Length: 152
Image (cartoon, rainbow, N blue to C red):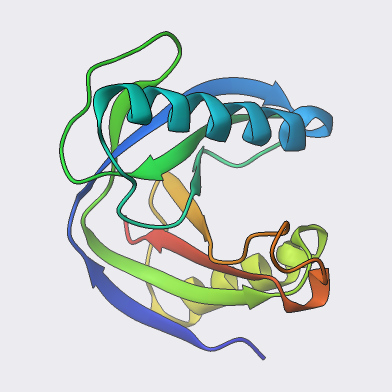
């Protein structure tokens, strides 16, 4: 059982790349988006203020509308595919998934049940903050991913 909580978030400025990609190409998209975003931030003298994120617009199917990047302290200037954005403020249902990315559907199912049980409506977007770096922690069973799903 995952610990699920109703939390409050402030809106957070971000820098990232948004694309519609096939699910089979998601890993490569994230890698390129994080690299491109870090290069744009370095060129602008901006540092991330938190872990990398993936923001999902709607429910994924064979393709997914996704934005990947980093939270930042202030709005950046667009550079190539890297654009300013934000993680929404307000109430969120939040949980930390422990384990490999390909098992996150179980945590999402628990979050979905929490919305129903609490009588809440899920928002149109959700995001994941990747708290573990696979290059530092090679064991997928130890990876930690915070999932935030705003209340609609």
